[in-house]
Amino acid sequence: MGMETITISRAEYERLTTQVAALQQENNWLIEQIRLARKWYQLARRTGFEIVNIIDPSAAVSPHAKLGEGVFIGKNAVVNAYARIGNMVIVNTGSIVEHADVLEDFVHIAPGCTLSGGVRVCRGAHVGAGSVVRQDIVIGAESLIGIGSVVVRDIAPRMVAYGNPCKEQHPLEI
Image (cartoon, rainbow, N blue to C red; front, side, top):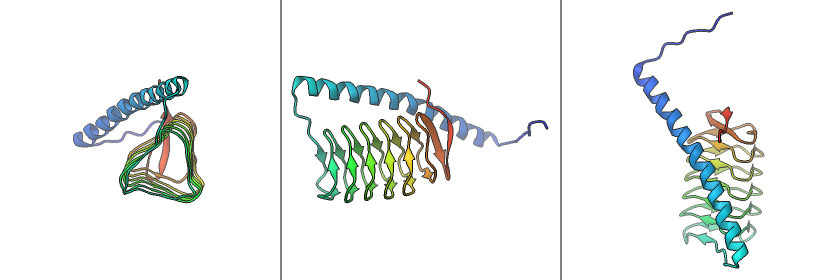
């Protein structure tokens, strides 16, 4: 069996190539962000600097949630009971971290995300803006979830994944 030929419009081709270029730039940005955050955190710990959390006054954080050091929780974000958030984690504007979610160190949850209960986002992963993650899902270490994805299956470590439903597209390249 041979390969099928698919014809797409010029506009669709340009849209897709723009998305691929944006993902490649985001891959590089994510890797650099993780490296810089780790270096900053290690330096601060070694030199005795106090590492503070920044929580917007409009954010709702359960007193039963556990927060690490250097956590940023943005405007109108919600962190519910028994969520555990590691060191140097960003929970951005309007995102929801539900009960019993675990966000390991150096995770970035972009604006408008919803993580249903029991989700684990492993060290250094990035969940793109507006994404929704079904309950009891694991997103592997240093993975990148694209904007607006609907994650209904576990994602392996160091993968670029996106879509509705979210699918692993290719390994994260360094």
